[in-house]
Length: 540
Image (cartoon, rainbow, N blue to C red):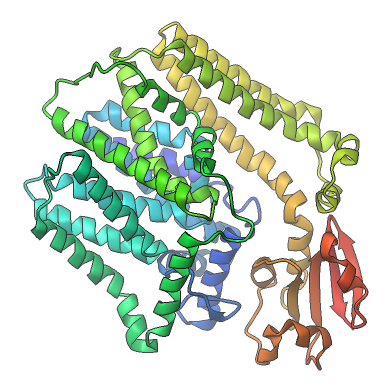
């Protein structure tokens, strides 16, 4: 009954309003467009973008999206639904694992801590690949941990290998890198003692290989090595070079996790205390202690690895959400059982970050209402033009942010007065509530500023046999939202031909106002519109 209740609550949290806002460039539209092109081309073995091979990602998540689109149509809801389903599976898995490690209470706290933290919750409402990848690799590591404690250790190894293979098919060989580093660091930390034998490792490798070869093997047999070679080369390049526009300092992901995983991240700081250890006094205490070690190792491996990696993107550290949420839930569980006390500075830090987030939410409507007063202080011409979008705001909407600030402060007061359960429930449930408000109420308005005019332009071209091209910036939106079909004339891929050649059907273009100078004066182009920082052109 508990599993059904958790599944229903998770479904209510993650599924409604998935299509309330357009997909965002790049990643969301990228994957959705690949799924759409699978359906259009009937080529389900190779990922494509613009109907050309796209070797940056393997196909599993794209298959999931394509299946969703076949059921519900090509739309934003269908593109995001697979992650919502993974979100339901994730909360059920966290409850089941927490229950096995301790009891039902631990399982419920872990699911609540995960769902009640900003980015972990928000990502299940997105169409990016990482929530699915993270779930598979977490299960691979969990079943590897279970090998030492299960009478069916070989079955655990097979399951670990199977989920590792699914993780590779979802995002690539980085799953193997993370798993190997986690295993190695655990082995070193545990003073070269580990409950995984060579036979187990062999089974993990075997089942991971069998799973991944379902696609890699078929692809090599059907089309040769070139696609796989390009795929591997891209993965290496991504780890060793800084992607354009996605650089950042070493501590980038540390800040992302502290703010983005609030309030769960605050409870990590409760580990900073004396060496006195609390034991639950249950038969599973040894397993629980060992699992905590595995989670610490996974957390630091992912955090340090992606702090070293040159490319810095928010979701690269999202695998940390699993160990971080467990370690936080472990402390929350002890707090609720009276076996741990929060220090004053822990509660103060909770207040500071919660108030900052509340102020940011409250400030959004004020920016919209008083944008004319702010524009003179903004030096970015494109941002200024974005703010010209007609979006309805009212000062009263600041109440959402103020309400969140009040609830965080109430939670802190309750925790300081040792009304632990009430304080924790207030904190996590209020965060879940404000996340829903943000997704349904604020994100669509922000999207109107950032890309709304461009999306409207592409949608207006649906059903027309035309060329559509973004000039001066990279986008996948023109393909997905114009519902582009394959072009018989392959000169289409040559921008110079579209601008100057003997085109065989109408060609439309879009550019940002900051890049428009060379295009608005191009002899073969005419401006047909301009809106919110975007300039729309047509080939004469």
